Image 1 (cartoon, protein in one colour):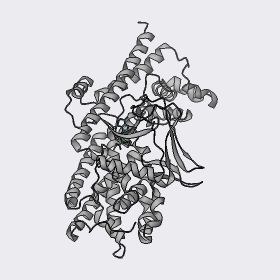
Image 2 (cartoon, rainbow, N blue to C red):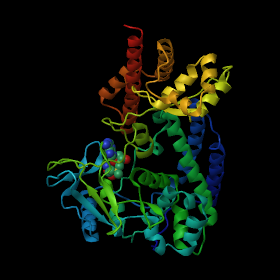
Image 3 (cartoon, rainbow, N blue to C red):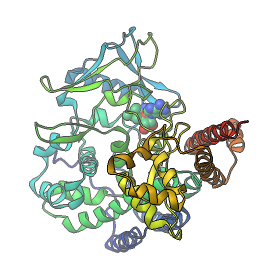
Image 4 (cartoon, helix red, strand yellow):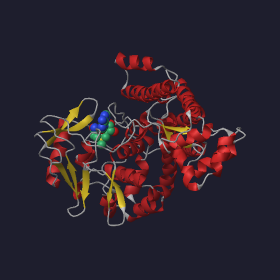
Length: 489
Ligand SMILES: C[S@@+](CC[C@H](N)C(=O)[O-])C[C@H]1O[C@@H](n2cnc3c(N)ncnc32)[C@H](O)[C@@H]1O
């Protein structure tokens, strides 16, 4: 650390810095606005994006302080570096895999449960790994005093990555050189691409995620400009190179690759694990551990892999909404088909207060997210039962003992046929409304996917729409079947 790699590129004039400060203030102000209406949230996003475009233009003369390309040479250097650092990975190799970027491929057949990669602690990148080489003033101002990096381990890791990425002498350089230049995270969507999510359950999450990270940039920009210290070259270098482009790159690296491992007995830390983080995801159980005795990452094969097969790992049992928002991809074969929908009571309903009271007694709330799937969860059943009760039913249930009231969450509670019909119908209406919110039809989306000429991000977003709509269509037909059975058809 501490060595300036090259002469500072394109220091911005004071006028431009002032303009960036004004734009950052405007972003911070706008990002405080919040709405439950996704279309209003989209308007806020568009206004923020306009300010951001101006920022990107002003910052355009400051180039990213590194060049990385995933050439054969850089990959070879990386593999040599891994070997020199003590990684054990002779059963696998790193290869380009269409639609996945880089990935791991087996060189020997692997048995389920067999260790296929070991990464020693010295290869793991984190803030604590560079802490001792960071000048004190920078450590104090950026990592202790700054409320964002102090409280958020992902921001801390992103800033540590930016600082170390600027250091051409870094021991991690061979790893940084094979990191992607560009991502498909929400931070790289254009507003036109973002609009592809309109009507989906992911729309608001995507908008909020971008708003949040742009606001982080604006906050950090102002913070770093003020915290700058002429006597500290690394601090100055950070000030000269801190752009939105650089920040979204670092945040995307962290979003798509970070892991949490124990730093010591009491504290965990966000880290990047070179080579292991080249493994792509598939369904299964997490089969990687941090060995507390050897301080190594060990990954075990999740199944038998043939020679030449892609060796995948499981990132966790996440829904496609989570993968899209937090990891920048969707996984068509995902066995996790969870969709969560916010359901609320009708405030103008004269029985609103009673329903709310009963909901609370069974541990539920108004405005809660419920899992929508063909098998209705206990919580969803509880909610739609309370939502649909008559005044008489409500009064009876409110009188029930604490222990009995929880029966409302039981699958086999017999409410009688007409009430069953009522609750399934109300849920069916809700699902139909959700399906109507999409500006496009499922068939149109499928045709679009088959057209074969979509950009990478648009393809992913249309795929996401198809996945979400398909789940809802399945729930719709399962509810219709249940109603048919109840009606004796
Ligand atoms: C930890 S990295 C894995 C290595 C990555 N492929 C690379 O080239 O650096 C995670 C990223 O890999 C890609 N990825 C992982 N699993 C995937 C999958 N099942 N389908 C598509 N992309 C996937 C996504 O871009 C994700 O953000």
